[in-house]
Image 1 (cartoon, rainbow, N blue to C red):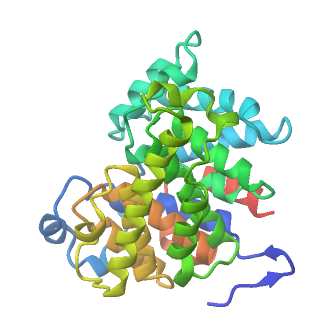
Image 2: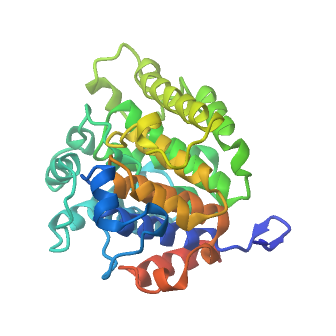
Length: 344
């Protein structure tokens, strides 16, 4: 596949590709979540031939990704992206999702509890955040932060961690969200998959003691760490261990083996990123296979496949996905309109 580029601009429609890919992975993994691999194979047949369900319904992963995307769009309509402009739109989007009748796709308890607390405007968001939770709900929805053009590294890191922190306050949730947004950003800008894990490890080391105070405020004080640097370092250290597991798994790749066995089941943030990365990097130029492999796993299949879809779509663009799939994905018009906004 040839990707057309002009100087300084990528014309592959990375934002559209990533958002559609995320939703497709979500829909493909929705029926297989909570099942082990033998049962998935028994119900779906060989994993390399898995087909998108009819109808192609998504879960809270896509719903909350759209909430983050709309929150960023609203914030940037009023000026440069910063914590002051972003916090309230995100809070309002999360509350709207919490009350939506469509919020019936087995959402996580952390998101539900935090959003219920966010709905009390008297409560600072830092008090609503679940400080002990590092569930993958923090980074399953962060892809839009990696797709918005024109952000500085500090803006991207701060926004990625803030959107996570509104619900999941654990430092590993923050670091994994930052890393996920970084991976999406790098792939959208043309980074080669082969060097991606190394670049993410370098980024984690560089930011290990960097607490995003402008974006997170006093969140760290709720965790009992002696300093904000010690707080955030715990998260980066867990993510570095997860990235090492990806590198180890890819030294002797085994596409027919459940990726969860080497990089984790994905219920927590660093494992979701690691297993999604493994699935993507097993099939960097075969995006449908990456999604199928991610969906046929014993763990949090829809979230793993969502993240794998975002990575694949950011890498290959909107043309990565079969039209027979992308034309019937739920929320298609919303995904396309936001993608077009950031691809232009």
